[in-house]
Picture (cartoon, rainbow, N blue to C red):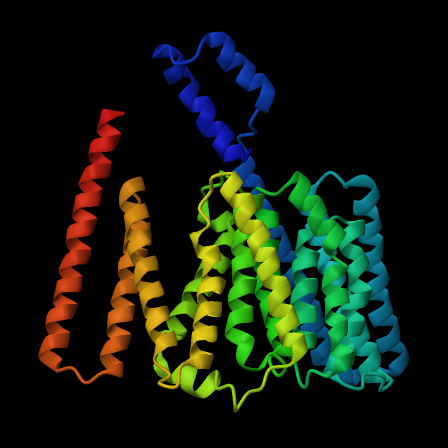
Length: 431
């Protein structure tokens, strides 16, 4: 359990014992089960962040100083300085590995500094002896040489920089067949990520790494397959977002802190964006035209595999009685695709998606009211407002009607927030 959640539980134990909800013996057993909570977690996080930033600044500062005086140095001096800095940071990393391996701050700072010095040494030596051909080759070699730092120093900062680096390599320039190697590069941090998932899934390091990994995964996927998905791209992306959402619900059950729920947040946001885009008629007419964009067997196979995985995730969530409505969106979109292929008027699919968007918005509002979550209610109302605004641009409606509708929506926002705030305040006072 998250340390903050354990600390909150410990604060509630005296109240529960006083109200005779649990016995003193049960409260003591709970404390023995979860163990002590360190009170300096916030301070350690603060020091860790500034330790990594400090290492970044030192490394970048050294690079800038060398760049300013580089022309005045001989080739031998350039080589000695470049390799000397690399050896020095390796010595520091070795010292940290053997004597400070239990210090997260030392490990992250040392790994960050050495990763920068590897890049600096490659760039400086390559520039001196004209070994650097292009930025893609430089990035690839730099990231491959930096990969061992993730495991040798158990460094989340090095993992984040590594993922960003290989994403820049994959997305930069033309994506040819050789850049499909990016999936091997992403998979190379799999053991490290799995270790965090298994043992430290509620830490800040895992949350930050997950955010970066998800964003970079979708960037790489788009770079690799955007020209091969044809008109099924929206359906494929909706299935990927559904799987991301399911992973978040299955791996982080009971977690309430939104910042530590990257899978759920990315899955929901991506699903809502795709659903909203597909409510526009011209999207179906121009981008999902069956004659203009033929579909290959590979695209159909990918859709089938993804939908099977989504079905398996929904079944598992249903058994655990968790919310799985967002995972149904790929099926709704698939239905719209099928209907669109038989509809000569080209209107059925947008109608289906508008109905889906409206129903989803209402269900979000209902869930927010039931749980007394103001943010959830506002999200649902924002979706309804966006849907209405979008339809105003599709049809010829007078400015007076638009103004009246917007005023009514604004009043609805205010009334809903006032009611929920009062209800929440009453709920807290009863407690």
